[in-house]
Amino acid sequence: MKKVLFVCLMVLMSSVALVAQNNNNMQERMKERMENYIKELKLDEKKATDFRKVYTDASEKMQKEMAGMRDAGNQDRETMRTKMTKLTEERDAEIKKILSEDEFKKFKELISKEPRRRPRN
Image 1 (spheres, rainbow, N blue to C red):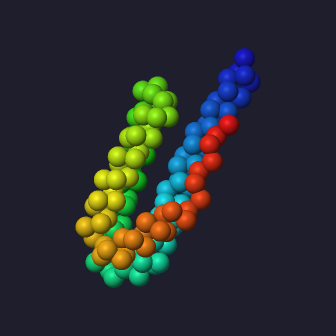
Image 2 (cartoon, rainbow, N blue to C red):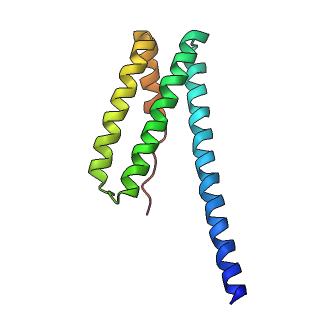
């Protein structure tokens, strides 16, 4: 019995470690993407700082919304898509206040060139 409990405990701890690692990887990818945008847009330090704040806040808000919907059992794709579209539009409106018209246009081009997530099977 003790061996079974020990194995169950090890599996649980491994699962928690994998979730934490996945979250860290996602945050690292987001930071890399954000820094790439700053580099490609050739933003000065003030704009880069403002951009980082808006982009980071928006990403965190999106992650919290998705987690909240999943925790509530709301897995409806259309609801999630609508909510994420709204949050993306809010993020873009804030970023548009920071960037010039040409910079914002280039930002949207950079986003459109990113590979889209593949649906999970």
